[in-house]
Image (cartoon, rainbow, N blue to C red; front, side):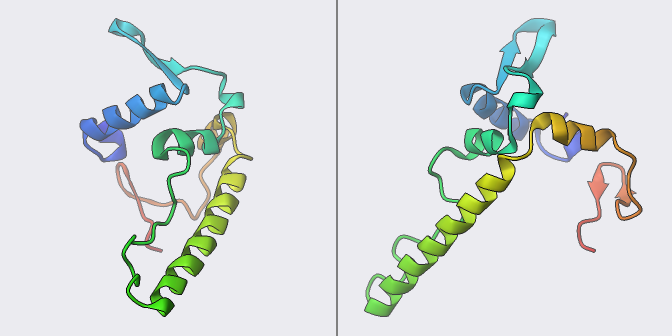
Length: 127
């Protein structure tokens, strides 16, 4: 699996462990492998995000000491944290409307003309 997504197997195992701890995946030792712990129709992308990133972990962080020595700097940090929190809520709301089943159905749909593969396993995301 790691090779097909262009990453190290350690990364895949770490994320798989987070998904198990999040109750989204169950692992059977031996030839059984891994499977979803619930039907794909019941698991949203928001569930996956929370399992991998944790509940309450900020999407966009602001350095804790940024601007703390001046009043303007403290205000900038507060304003950024507020805006980032709004962006995260909007993202999680959007992710909560897509299930793994819907995502999988999209993988089996015919590729559009915009979906070009330059090399095996790598998508062109620059253009």
